[in-house]
Length: 194
Image 1 (cartoon, helix red, strand yellow):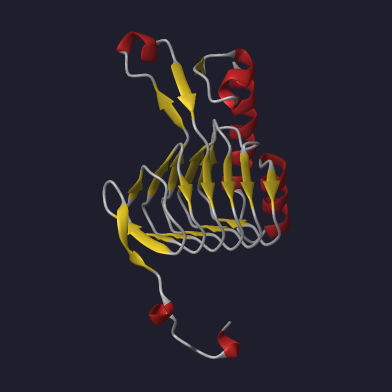
Image 2: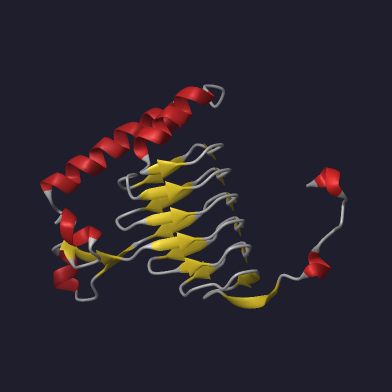
């Protein structure tokens, strides 16, 4: 079932190997979420043990949840505020300098539509890719199969169900492009501000 899951094929999550891998992740997450925020090195060690890859300056606030962890890859300077949930049955690749507001959900699995097959546990999962320099505002949801372009902003509460180009602001349910991010958005605070 794990091979089918990782290949994006239909699989059932009711499987001893997948159960054991989810339990391992939940044990690590329990330790992470119950640990004092000032224990930075220990918290980072857990994230590095959990994730497939974590770049430098990775900080995740508690409470954080995921399914497996090993399908998550984050670049340098990643920040996730409290309440982040990444259901990583497929690969979730996050670039450099990405910020998540509170209560962000990334959901790669999709259950089948037939009630009998769904009750039997059948689903498939599609990857999510987030480019560099992306800001995902609070309460946003990103579903499987979506790629978010670099330098874009996902507005608070948006539900992203299709690809997002580079350098745009998207918002709404379902999310749509609101506008391009342009030079007019630059504050020109001077070199010390960058």
